[in-house]
Amino acid sequence: QLHQEKYLSNGELLSWKGKTDEVYSTISSTEDYKPTLLGTVPHMDENAALEVLKSATNAYNKGQGDWPTMKVADRIACMEDFVEQMKTKRKEVVKYLMWEIGKSLPDSRKEFDRTVEYIIDTIADYKQLDRDSSKFHKKSGVYAHIRRGPLGVVLCLGPYNYPLNETFALLIPAIMMGNTVVFKPAKHGVLLLSPLLEAFQTAFPKGVVNVIYGRGREVAAPIMKTGRIDVLALIGNSKSAIALQDQHPYKNRLRLVLGLEAKNPAIILPDADLDLAVEECISGTLSFNGQRCTALKILYVHEDIREEFNKRYAKRVDELKFGNPWDEDVMLTPLPEADKPKYIQELIDDAKDKGAKILNERGGETSNNFIYPAVLYPVTEEMRVYKEEQFGPVVPIKPFNSIDDLLDEISASNYGQQVSLFGTGIEKIAPLIDTLVNLVCRVNLNSSCQRGPDVFPFTGRKDSAVSTLSVHDALRSFSIRTFVASKDK
Ligand code: G3H
Image 1 (spheres, rainbow, N blue to C red):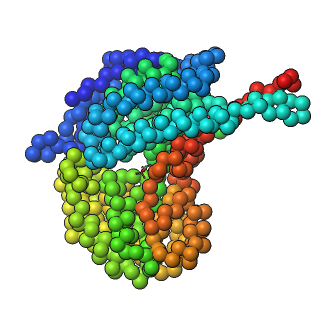
Image 2 (image 1 turned 90 degrees about the vertical axis):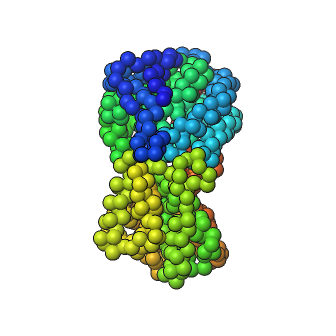
Image 3 (image 1 turned 180 degrees about the vertical axis):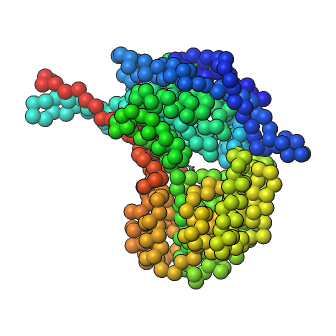
């Protein structure tokens, strides 16, 4: 067990003397099912959080040579130091990724390695950005030195499904651009950051990175209320983002960098390569049990092929292996949120009540913290699983006949992240691709939806995102063009 009693403020790892929160894994270490106590973290309160905020604002307001005004080369050296220290913690972080959120061993390693690569790419892109954007201009007798500068103090909150990679996709570019940060990890995937606290402390000047723990409404909300936060950076659900935004007394001046919900559809056209479509839809819908914002969350299958597609897809779902994250070839693992199986069961029951059937034999089988994926067909607009972002192992399939009606349906959705399109006559479907890409932000041809490679823009329309996250774009999302002007050269 790891009793993590420190939090990071003003460059110091301070011991928390108050209440603590227990961190459980839904993976049982005994034969008779019992969640495993992994450790504890500070349950901080409002006063402590506000003290930490002071450290971030002081660090931002410092003069020449401190973090926001530091030379590019020096700032890069700090980031390089951080990533070198981080690399030495791979084993520990991967272990917690498996225990805390149930991510499989290969995916946990991938998450770690992808994050290291993200930081290295961010450093390279930052050098390029500085070269391209730091320029002298002259117009109408005014000389200006224009460059990209930081926005201020960032409140950063990451999600449980990618507690390392997605959190760092916010944190790293925010820091790199010279902002200072107060960061609160997600409830699940919190201990895995403990091995990295010392690296944050030693690699960056004091007050640049601050780490707090506790409940959002007890620590993050009071921080927002002060009006001292310039950027809210959050990956999670819109409800939490709106609740925090609403706390800020001057909402209009708050910059938002948000990765929110999605209900990415796959469209399977009559001429699709069915073997390929089935395999891509399997990983697209169910890798990490469907707990990905980019997961395929509804499959639209053309009437002409739906019988064959449904049969093959449902059979493949029943072949998927369930086990602990370290077992070989597992795709389905224990769900980190203890109440998730109940929620998924509610969606299944609601769809069944309204006329859908479970197509696969094992669909809905439950045991403790696990529910076997259910493939539901035919799904209609009245069903909860059609409307809600399930973020778990249940797959709605809806038949379609007319592509025009389907486009209307996709355009009426509250979400607009990605689409997968399966078909072979690419030239014939080119106009469809053009339309779809204007309804979402990424169309994946004959492949499932995904966020990577991390250098490509990651964003969404409507309720799916605000601003763009990717190595390249996030540096811009966390900065503003500033300049010094003079009439003298
Ligand atoms: O939860 C949303 C993640 O950004 C998904 O990332 O497509 O690499 O799994 P991924």
